[in-house]
Length: 319
Image (cartoon, rainbow, N blue to C red; front, side, top):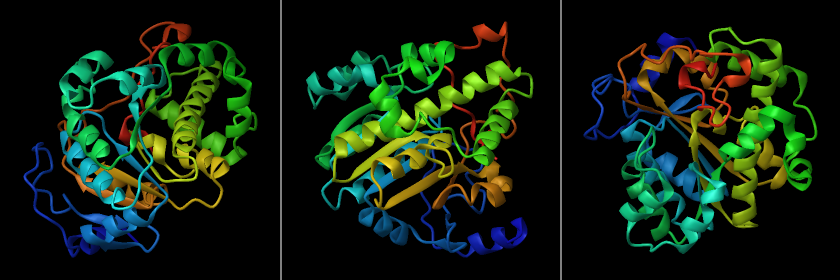
């Protein structure tokens, strides 16, 4: 389907007309539309939510600084919670913060945000508070799933051998990605950094990306057990080729997994490629003016590139 035909098809989709927080693209005719990529057709919100309620795992790919994504995440988690939900995992909360989630009072989200140190930066808790509250109402355990900065640094320095051996084996990190996927992953990372990375750093960054994705899948599968779970993560993390679903398939063979991309309308041009990476694409306004998410710059010697906290790849670099 050509982009023009796709656009016309999506315009016929049933969609709600919410009050968007962000103005960039809020009046775009696609804002609020949902596309089923497997059947290559627009769907309504009810149909998507019904599919979410049936799935074993629901993986939601967000842009962290997009407040409209928080509303849709809460809606999707509530739909998943129509059936017993064991785990709601968040990449934005790192695994070493799990004790805070367990020990903190459940009715004081503001204090929880301060305890998690999420009140500032690119993911303030006040944008996630409603999402956490909805997840708690479903009865799901809140799961810290993001790879800690210390582990990122260790993988950058020593590869996956720096991670616990049992984790590496059970997730499949001890095996290389298929050659075509490995090459595509490196191309994606290279594009995110404007093609300015040397091969050594590119290889190490690919190892970090794999470790992040494997860690998300491992935490979700471990807490959910044989039950159901939801993951909220950067959109790049829930893509079906080399992202968390690749590892989840090995951890929970046969599980019914639905991957949903919350896609800012600026990136509709990427649909021919993005459409094969997710089960559904839900279009939203953007948090920033179009074209403002350019390439990330290394900004120093190769070994100094944000080693402790490598930012998730921006959505424009997925294809």
